[in-house]
Amino acid sequence: MAPANEITGETTAETKAAVESSHPISTLLIIIAMQTEALPLVTKFQLSEDTDESLFPKGVPWVRYHGTYKDLHINLVWPGKDPSLGVDSVGTISASLVTYASIQALKPDLIINAGTAGGFKAKGANVGDVYVASDAAFHDRRIPIPVFDLYGIGARRTFSTPNLVKDLNLKEGKLSTGDSLDMSPHDEAAISANDATVKDMEGAAVAYVADLLSVPAIFVKAVTDIVDGEKPTAEEFLQNLIAVTAALDQAVTQVVDYVNGKCLPDL
Image (cartoon, rainbow, N blue to C red; front, side):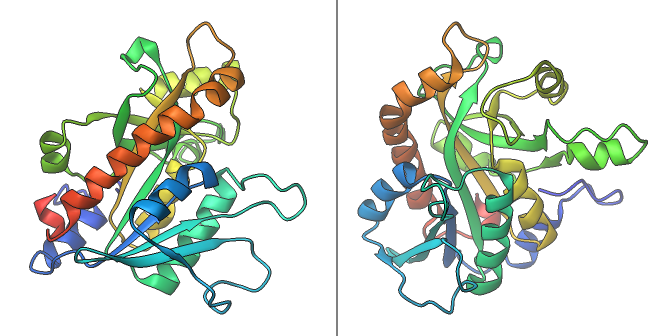
């Protein structure tokens, strides 16, 4: 999920996977931005809400659910509701903080960032499609200074899971992340430059932190709206959220079942 090592061509996470090839995945961290997306998985995996107030810093609204499913210790963390406005704490800031704190506290072997996303019909996306992101980058961090421009985009390959994608018959595509639901002309140009098939508000931030701390992460994104379609994004997103969340949760369940009992390189 990091830029390739100039000598070996491997990513940091892939190097870690090679080192840990003899150890089956044990601790799984699922990061989800919205309660609507999270609760069906809490039910599916029979997870319990954590009451340990010392796990995260005092005062944060973050919520952890945890439990044992088959051979996996599953932790599902979502950023909770904004304390002032009562809405889901979506976006890159909450995602970055939650990812960092969860890695530090829970020491996961693998991260799954699951969520809904916009898709582009020009890239073949349809409402209800589920993608595994092959790459992640930002589209709203514009720093027009040499090298800083590349830092702003923050393009990284995600942890490679060719067997998982093939065996579960999932689609692959590049993911572009920004903190706005809509798309400005500047964003549109940047997303096109990123060659993205799907667009979300958290993925590249999770990828950055996971890469920084050398934890493999995969990204499962279900399409709620067609960004380059005819309907307004917000209207289509709300119209399809519940149905597409069901497709997302089914895909995440398949991924978790697939991961169970396997080592990182097996994916």
